[in-house]
Amino acid sequence: MNATTNPIDLRLEDVTKIYPGAIALSEVSLSIRGGEVVGLIGENGAGKSTLMNVLGGTIAPDAGAIVADGQSHAALTPAQAIELGIAFVHQELNPFTNLDVTGNVLLGREIRTGLFGRIDRTAMEQRVQPILTRLGARFSPRDPVLGLSLADQQLLEIAKALAVDARLVILDEPTSSLTLSETQRLLEVVTDLRREGVAVLFITHRLNEIEQVADRVVVLRDGKNAGDLGRAEIGRDRMVQMMVGRDVKRLYQRKAHEAGAPVLQITDLRTQTYPESPVTLALHGGEILGLAGLVGAGRTEIARALFGIDPVLGGTVHVRDRLLPQNSVAAAIAAGISLVPEDRKAQGLFLEFSISDNISMPSLARMSSRGRINRKAELALAESSRNRLSIKAASLRGPAAELSGGNQQKVVLAKWLAMEPAIIIFDEPTRGIDVGAKAEVYGLMQALADRGVAIVMISSDMEEVIGVSDRVAVMSKGRITGILNQEQLTEEAILRLAVE
Image 1 (spheres, rainbow, N blue to C red):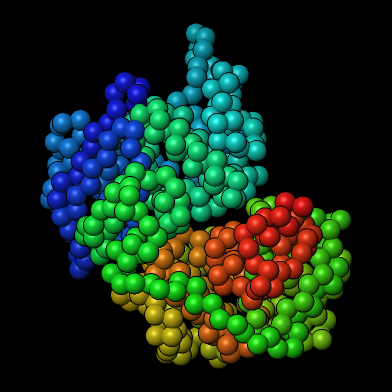
Image 2 (image 1 turned 135 degrees about the horizontal axis):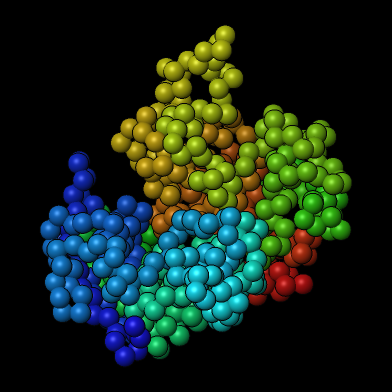
């Protein structure tokens, strides 16, 4: 099916979906046509995911209609969605890591040849390579998926969508793991798809991307239509106001912090990834130090080495003038270091465990006696954390998997705050969370710095780095290429150091 000659015409009319105790969608309407990019925005819990699942046929609405190419449906099945040419790129990455890139992109649509239908690997790789080239991917059709970075896995998901003859591509936070250059390339791909007559539903919390590519914006709030914006009306302040129902005047709330004495001194630290690039860096109490650079610059590797996850090949780390034993997470925690990882689902939470269990996990030693956990103390800690961080959850006994991204991030933070750390490392702290939750995370970071906690913030969001940090250390190829103070912080200055 060719999108240019047969563009999609799709409408949701007064779609409602009700779960026990919650209304996910209430009379939501949305339209999209071939050759149009529609931005879909809203805070976590606004109904975007439910709407996506309705379009994909995995959730049947309780009321309303889906009108596709003039034909009305009470609900779609997954097979009907595929037949209509609806392709998804989900935020949550679920690649088959036992296969290579080609096997993932053409899974279920393998090219076969001969009497016995043998898989034609050459033909499949020739089919996949132009898609990867189009995306500017750094990996090849033969590369194993297990070795791909998060950013490359995100590009792989996009390649899978482009490999089918899609008439509507739904992109859910497609740039959350991408570098600036990869993000720009993706936005160019979106523009190309529009030119070819493909419809794109673009879901993101990065509003500057919506400003760049969207023809229209549909805003959801609390499961309802909060309004639409035409191309001429699209602007950050207007979108934020419609999403949260109020003006968010100062998202970053940056204020100067008086840096205290050095609490962390890294000297000639060498990691496995960049053994020939020693890193020397100091961190002061009460400051927010941004760690900027392109994906692969070595920022996360430094964080993991400091926290004892990855082996250190050389150098020293002192916390308050005491030498930190290397390659020991327990020693790092005992020294007052906490890590809020980039991939909170895989590395920061036990999703199937309760919220209360997750929050108390690092503190079990002081909540236990003779091998038995004091459940009353555990619940009290969780309740205190919920109030302190405004964690939105119906029950603290519910699984962490049921929380929104922003609230999951708060749970990860809550478990470390219970340990009263002196140093907190945030790796991509607002990845995949909405603008309201971002403002809360920034406010928490500022409050921690005000209390004298030293913060390292690793972020690929340039606005975030500039808006939150007191100083920024820029990395490239495993080494620090420069350190900028607030007066020097500009996007150009950071990029210049990031590409050295």
